[in-house]
View (cartoon, rainbow, N blue to C red):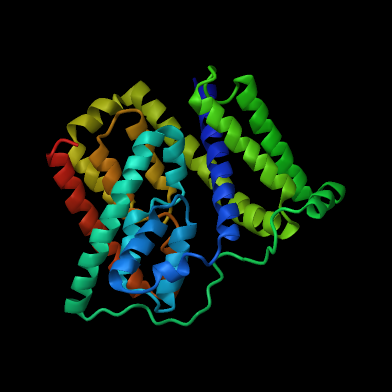
Length: 340
């Protein structure tokens, strides 16, 4: 059984890794095209920044944080982003329950718009102003002129770096695991097909992108800062659930104390990391908690999205998190009372 937990963790991590690479890949291709939409009148800010937040991963939240730090968007707009975002946990949710995940992202997008409007109204009453820091934050480098060229492909294969070779081996191992049935579903269902396609795209990106993109975007950012942490938290969450069900009758304990579990989920969401949130993602995937608890945790937690703001303004960090936890608890308990 522990081997199955390990394989499940490896499957989730492989899918998350491939999706994070894909998001970063398309982010570089389309860089700068959303900025005009995001900046502007309040409603446009709520729409644009809530959209950035509801996209999987940390990139959207980092982009909004950078705009807020430079005073380009309002307090309500950054609140909209942090309410809508689920950080890297969004990729895990897509791997475990894609249908519910997309529904959750849509709800978070709407919740972000509403929360942003309320937050700006409160900001007027409390005389709050956006952060005016001019510190330059390099969220993601954008030095790649072209991510795909035949001359670049020949260069990559001829002068294979250690990082590229390691990622090629990792991609091939994951692909072999999927196609041999060692990782993921045994039957060729849509989940196994999706895993195969996503991991094939990962191999394509690893082989074709320039050295800068591979070293800075994939290796330094995703591999060194996210990959092991995601695998560790995923494995830990699955082990806790497995041991809880085996020795402590965790399912019964949680079902009888849902209101307290919802409060605990909101408090855990205050931690600026997606990892702790995965315990509630796994519990929902296994039917142990209702949707309201997952929704509360998703509203309050924001992955690493708040770290740039924490680095320049503790006051703004605290204000945003206080609003988010109050908003998340209100929405969560209303949904819990409604039976969701």
